[in-house]
Image (cartoon, rainbow, N blue to C red):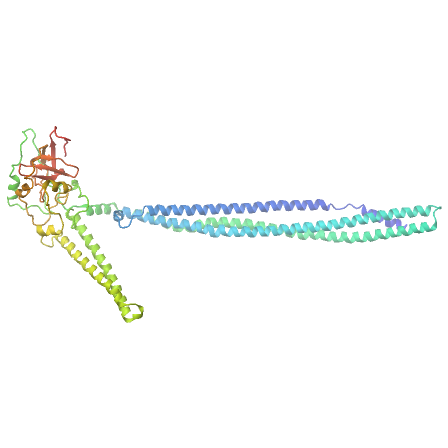
Length: 576
């Protein structure tokens, strides 16, 4: 009976509902798969944000580069006329704007640099660390899963062995009982059957003990697996994921802070632009224009009324000019009230002008001469600075021969001395011209004027002379009246140059709108209102060739006369 109880106990143990470890394991594996997908998605989001910040930094850098190029493009070129234009308040404000735009571009470069270093670089390193950590956690999780599955397999094997031994013991018991009940079986066979049943029963007991031990071990491992190992791994994965979320949030905050840090500096740039704009002074700019371009001449006088109801006649006799020259009146000087000047309408001399700027109005000439004197003084100062430096170097070489040969700088010192002397002579020359303009020195004679190079002597025929000097027969479009002693050229000197030429045909008439004093060869003096003959029209250089009589002809500024060309003349037109 005891043996039967033991048997029933084993059967009851085998019939206990087993825990579906496979189902639990599959569920755990599913959770690992879900977490693996989610954490990979989180890394993808982080990498996407890194790419976004990188592209934003590239945009900022490109924008800064374009701003710098824009500022550089509109900067005035050094030693050019454009640089001189930046003395006005409006152009100074524009230049300040360009400089501030350059600083503004620098702040965008700072944004790009900070985003690259503080966000892109840091997050890129963090992503690599995150991938390694994630890989480690899921490796530990899979390792734990494999361990519990191994334990489960051991338990299943122990259970099947216990089940098999129990069945073998049951069959041996049944066989023993059958043999024991059979009267035809010998006692030896019954004893053998009984021993076999006891052996099987012992094996079943051993399997039971092994199965019980394995089961206890598995339950312990399973408890640790589901209550310790897996929760710890899940906790680490959760912490890792939370750190990723916090990190991307901090990066977004840094993204905003990088912009916010440069806002004060950008604000200062904009404030400076506003300040520069507020410094624009239209009155000051207008005054500078007036100072830069004022000529110093008085405006022309009123034009007399001409009565065209009377037949055209010469308003002034052929000897009017000579009479006016000999009437004892002094010719107008700079600053006097002269009626025959319309300076704004006279063309400027083409090409390089004379060295003393005598082709310019008085005020313009004074400014140019002063600028030249200042420039020469600056050159002298530079040369003197170099000479002083070389002198000090020579003294050092004399005191310390091992440092260099003192005689090696003598040649350069001599060159500098010669340069300084030449520059000083130039300064004296220009200061002399400046003194003449300002009325500090007596005027020079005509011979001195020729030697200074104000105009070239006319050695060729009058026709060639006029053709060569068409732009300005007297060296100037402005026909300025200097303070030099005027040496009138007799009409006979001028006529001699035309003795061998046939007189040009008359192509029309003209009326002098203003008085013009032709002081140089090739020009002719006219009085306001005088009627003369046109023998050569303006060729585009601003001069018209006219004739008073058979003995007097020359050039006058086209703007000084009103021309009436004959209708039959070639290219007939009226100049006003």
